[in-house]
Structures are given as C-alpha cells and as structure tokens.
Length: 464
Ligand SMILES: [Zn+2]
Image 1 (cartoon, rainbow, N blue to C red):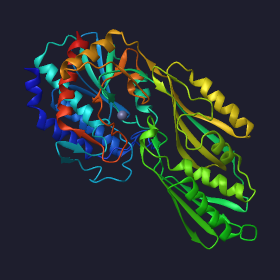
Image 2: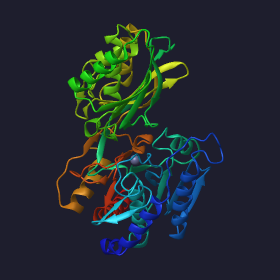
Image 3: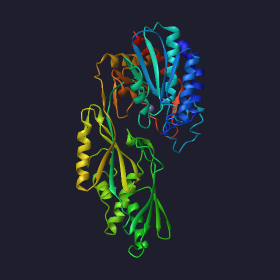
C-alpha cells in the first residue's frame, strides 16, 4: 500500500528533484541580513517551502536562514534535517551542472545526491506517511542553506526554534551512520614580505572550498634576473616535475613563470578519491627556493610534515579507531592580509580529542616560527551501535533492501550532529560510489524512490 503509493509518486519525485537542481544555490555569505546566503539559496528555500505548502503542510521561513515543513500533532517532534545549498559545480561535467539531465535512469546535476534529491525523497515520504499511516507525532523537515559553508543556518534555527525529539539527516549513507569523525580546519600562516629574488606574486586555487580536494592551483613567480638564472630555474623545474611525477605545467613571460598544477576534485572526507593540486605545488615551490639557497618556512614545514600525505603520518597524527583513520586535506593556499596561508581540513577519529591534534600541529608549526589559527571545529558524533535509534533505522534499511548491513562510521559531517538523538541515514546506498561534491554528481532514480519508501517507514517508526 505505502510502497505502491510512493511508486505512483515516482515521476513527481523526479520532476521536483530536477526543479530544485535547476535553481543554482551555492551558499554565499552576503553580509546582507535580508538575504544572508544569496538569491539562489533564497529561491531554493522558497521553492521547497512552497512545495510543502502545496502538499498541505505547515511551513515557516526563518529569516531566509533556514525553514521547515511540518505535519502532524503531538508533543513529540520527529526531525528530518537536510540542506538545499550546494558546493560550486567545478568543471569536468558532461552535462550542465545546474540543468538536471536524465540519462540511464539517473538524474545528473549538482545537488542530486547532496542533498536536494534526498530532501525531495524525504518530503514525499512525509506526504506518503501522512496520507497512509497513523502518525502520532509532529514530523518536521528542517532545511538549511549554509550547510556547505559554516552551518550558520542551523545555528540560527537552534537559536530560534524547537529542537527535534529524535530524528535523522538524509545527507550521508545507508544503512545508518553511528559515528561521524570530528572535523577541524586549521590555517598555517607566515608573514610574507615579498623581498626574495623569487617572489610569489599571485596564487589562484579557484576559490576552492576547504572541504573539497582542490583540482587546480596556479602560482605566478617573478624572478630577479640579476640573482636568479632563468634557464637554470626552468631546467630545475623540468627535472623536478619529471622526477616527482607531478602534473604541473608552466608558461614563461619574460621574468615571470606561471606554474599550473592539476588534480582531481573530491570530498575532503575521503581525499584518497581525489588528487590534491595544491600539495605538489607547495613541494615544487619549496624545491625551487632550496635550489637557489632561499627559504620560506611555511614551504619547508609543508614538505617535511605534510607533503602529499593525506593521513597525517609525518605530523605523527595518523591515528585510527573504530570510526576509521584520520584524514587530512590541503584545501587552501593563498595570500591573506600580508600572510602566506595554507588551510588544512582534518577528519579526526571519534575517540581522539580535537584539541590534542590541533595542539600537536601548533607545536610543530611553532618550531618553524609559523602561526596557526583554528578556522572551525565540529565535535564528533557518536551513538553506540546498539542505541535504539541506530538499531531501528538500520533494520528498516535492511528489511527494505533484504540485506544485512551493520551501521557505519564516516568522515563527513552532517546536521545529525547539530542535535541530540539524531543520526544520518542515507541516501547513498552501500557500495555505491559517493558522488557528493564530485563532477557528474548523480542520483539513481530507482534508489531515490526506494529511499523515499525507507524514509516513510522511518517516519512511522520514529513517530510512534
Ligand atoms: Zn550534504
């Protein structure tokens, strides 16, 4: 009955997912209190709230920071917490990222799996549950539009609105996530005076987000030709690129050399799926300086302590526990107010205090006279595997798919950790490649419909 009802909604789920994909909603922090995260996010939020209203639900826009769609009565509040903002498209797409394209029973477009498709699946799961099942509590779909940046939307929600009693976030993987690693962003800085005979005059990483493995990094160098021999420098660059097998090319314009490093974009929670474009650049720069007996501490530090590693081994922080291994992504390299700055994003196993990792890094940086600054911290989420919420959701998934999966731990951070008694639940299926933040992001249509059925059952069970 319920499954059939949802099966009949398939075309609607697809078309509404497409409609949302067609609204580009990269979160911008505008400083404008009326539209805090830009026009695109406002449009995506209004569109979804409007859709909720058309389905007969109560809706509320909370100052364009976030919003919710709700039905049902009672004390208990079941929360479903998702987001409508997306990461920038990046390139490498075979279809226009902000024009949903249906091909091979999949919808392609930025946000299809993260998190617009799952939000639409959740909304129609609410509709199906409301029309077919007896739900004894209120069910609220909470929608943020600053998830991919700084979570200011959910902070605003928490300041002004009711917390869910129990809930899930459809923003990660099935069967169910019982642990999310801690997240820390750390900036490493060195004052840069630009008086060396090899000057860094420009750095461009195409505004890479810190939680994304960068696929591009270019650096413009200006040489003082009285002190630096151009031919020697070019020969050295060629040899080093070949020796280290780096994907770096260059162009020469009089006394300027523009180096371009290329990589592969991925989510920083699994840097092994991408190829970092910044790390080889920093190593090459360090080698160039050293070749001419010059030194920049930040580059020296970088090559000795990070290099192309993404597990923190040389920093001596390569820890692991049941939630997995520590991962490290170099997401930023730029000038910032007279400083040369490298930004790293760490995913820290749940049993290790974040402060112990940041202290270790600060201490090593101190020995190079480098400053460190914490750019943001999200404490880990850990719910024991035998917690009733985790057990219920995992068994709903296993029953619906006739499988026998155990709950898992991830390095990604979801809104589940914003509230007590919440975990993340779908909508990526086990063993499927995680396409979030990648080029050619897609969602499989049958799996999206199946996710909707699973969410409807979860609403029923949690609403009991
Ligand atoms: Zn997401």
